[in-house]
Image (cartoon, rainbow, N blue to C red; front, side, top):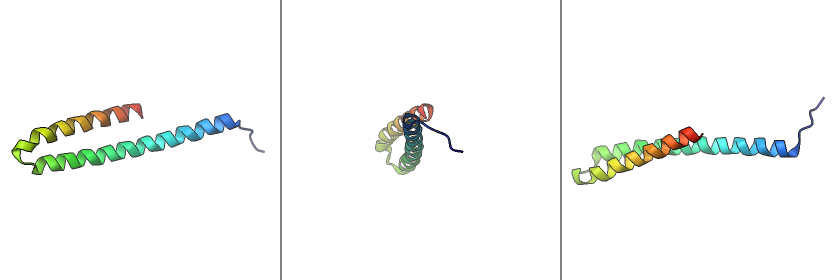
Length: 70
């Protein structure tokens, strides 16, 4: 026997799954960007390091927010 599911419930479930998938992808991209920022910091000349450090902090904050929101 089948179960009757309202279209609204189906649409909400589908939307929620899509949002969760998008959040996981966003977190993955942020993690990759943070890894790149660390690598660029390591090879950066001394005068560029403060900029790279700020970039790392900003990316870490956005990643923290995304993980908490997800």
